[in-house]
Length: 122
Image (cartoon, rainbow, N blue to C red; front, top):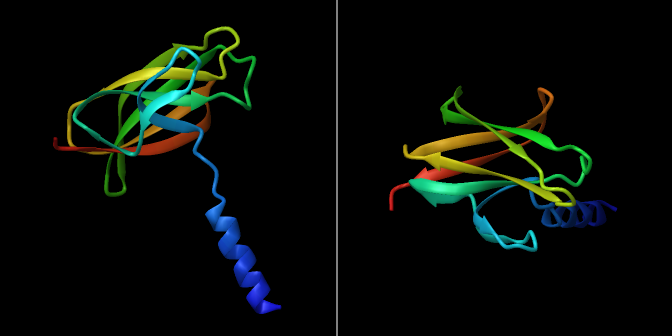
């Protein structure tokens, strides 16, 4: 019984879902993402939120925090509107300091998703 439980736990971890917030170089007109990842060079890229759970919501706030150890400092707030019929909403981000950042997406002040991105030297 125990070996079967172990295999089940391993398989469950291997089937992890994609996060609700992606960090990408852009999106295509059909809504698919381009060159996404957790690591970027200093500069501009895009936060992409998949709004599957909130299809009728139009306004989303993207709050950007710089993370240093256990300290989190708010450095930016970007409000974005979803296009009619779109399954995603995007926010252009411009981060020029090397380090770790956390981005939260909120609706009416309630956080609905968050993810981290690392900014590295070229």
